[in-house]
Length: 422
Ligand code: AMP
Ligand code: GLY
Image (cartoon, rainbow, N blue to C red; front, top):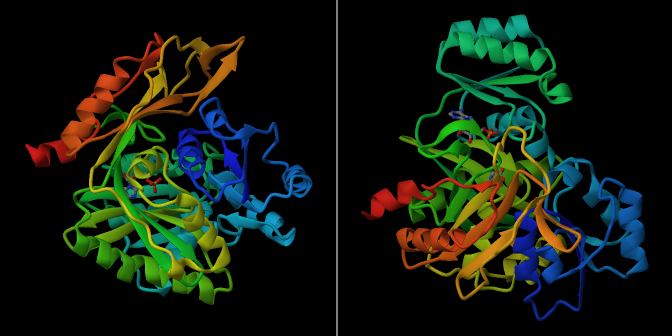
């Protein structure tokens, strides 16, 4: 199979590493990729926002299958364009990607199909939103409706904080994404990420993970794209997984099909495990980054036929096997992230990979032959172990071998699971 992978982060390096191991792969390209992805695929300098150029490349190179990593091209309709050109794609249509692209859209599906989630209202102006907040009281959650790079959510502990967040949204802090606001009840519990493939009619549960969104140890400081993750998440017991499939994933799949926009790709459900059970915080329509890096370390099956089955509607004919050993990934980021940071700082040493130990590249590049940090989140130091504690020890030992003066990482990735193991 001739495959094109789209994206350039740590998630895409993990997908590339796994896809390249498939005996079905005959030719593997990635656009734009990064130096880690380049170890497994031929990099193509395509502008992935230019869908005409992506389709033309696929035609010229007889690409059979395109795997889309990030959400932005999906929300922009890249999967629709490729399918219209007769090319198979892993990833949803623009209409189905609204599950991530619009929080209001997802909340409306939850309401229609009785999917457990926080009670909510949608608003297109500040006075009504503020009146609702005053009536509901705090804590309460204010969300910009559209894609805001993970920054559009305020968990407000006081009414004043919520009112300020409403002003931010309507005064344009998140651009178009904030033109509509969703206000939602605060859910109390432990968060978990749940990943499930879907071909429109069938769903295949993959695995669970837990992310660490805050930049600092002890879950302090501003939110980031994710500073580390591990899989599986102990809070997702077999009973919770079964309930999540029945109460959340299956009704969503049915709802999307009934709306005329069947969902094909990966459901990444952000869950809060409350006293009542799993409740949906949000959907993403792509793999989590860095959750994917931990997941790929545990996946024993060939990834390519699993993703291809989503495109072909044959997900009922495949299974996914997982290692019981947990995997944990520590994100190394540029000092200053998630604020401003220096670019092109040199990374002078990386440890070699070995069994169960792998450094995935995220925001890296090559400058005059030297590896440099080009982004906020730069390296994903990943290891497996018999326990989360062991995976954590191995990952941090590996991180200690990286020579990069401008890098930093959290020291407590996995703390919830480690506490459970002690
Ligand atoms: P989101 O961008 O929707 O994932 O929200 C970012 C983070 O805000 C989540 O990971 C949660 O930690 C928190 N959050 C979102 N919605 C709620 C809610 N209804 N109750 C409590 N925390 C929430
Ligand atoms: N790590 C969270 C995300 O990918 O959205």
